[in-house]
Length: 123
Image (cartoon, rainbow, N blue to C red; front, side):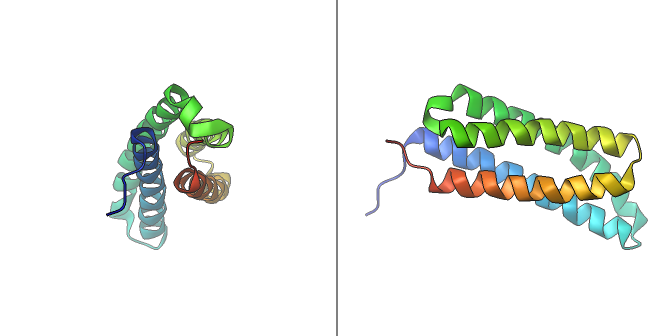
């Protein structure tokens, strides 16, 4: 029977999974209302606040477990937290074009964080 990973890795992987799930959900809500389903804008707005909270809490988790996370994962988590706060500000400022472009970059950064976290092992 396979052994479970170290508890710190389980926590970090869970945090990364929540982050990427929020980012993908936000992209879905945005696509729905940009595609003409205006009622989904409210979901995107509420999802934005949830995504900011999840990313900030996730960054805190990576900071607390920085020795287990390693420098690459810690840096990615911090950049993602800062980027999501900036994304929220762009949305609140109604800067749609840069908001969409920045969202694509955040999805890539979230994917990198998830990928690096799942491949990471404790030495």
